[in-house]
Length: 193
Image (cartoon, rainbow, N blue to C red; front, side, top):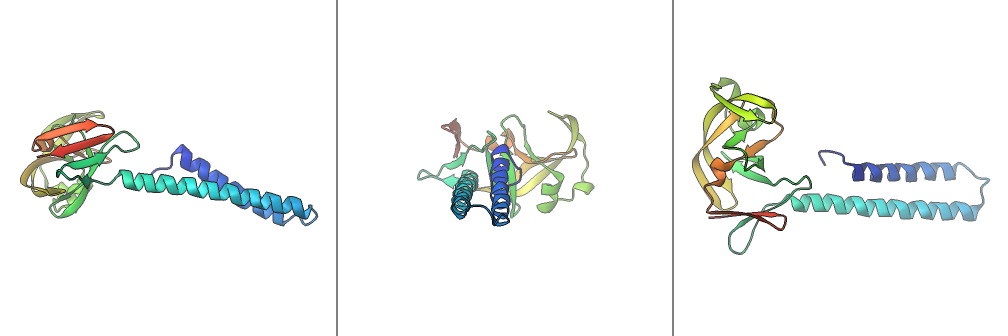
């Protein structure tokens, strides 16, 4: 869980209230034993409900981020909770997590991802320019030796390294056009060759 959203915060508050309530009830020996036991069971029930809710969120998030290959050999990507499609590809034998971005012209790597796949971002010549949501940024043209997505292997794939701040690498149209068909329906993105 990289970020905490409202639902997770509510679960954490409920769990904290359960623990605090238990300590409060244990420190009040004069309280009627039946009332104490009822309150403890209520807290146990609340904690169990919060635990089940958290478990469902964790398993749904983990399952929803998994690339799968269907019987026809199509790559199937479920939509993330934030509405984006994410794909982890092997680039130069290292995993890189991309946001699938049909608005991006090329594969755009962050400096950190470029370094992980063996490209020295500090040694690049940032001669290109790209317009982004955050304004204009400098880019450096590179060739990726190998990109593997599911069973598909591509060699000498053009890409750019972004000189600006980026939280995630982008998988743009320059790569997506290598696929014969791109379809988005029913909360899934499908790629096939």
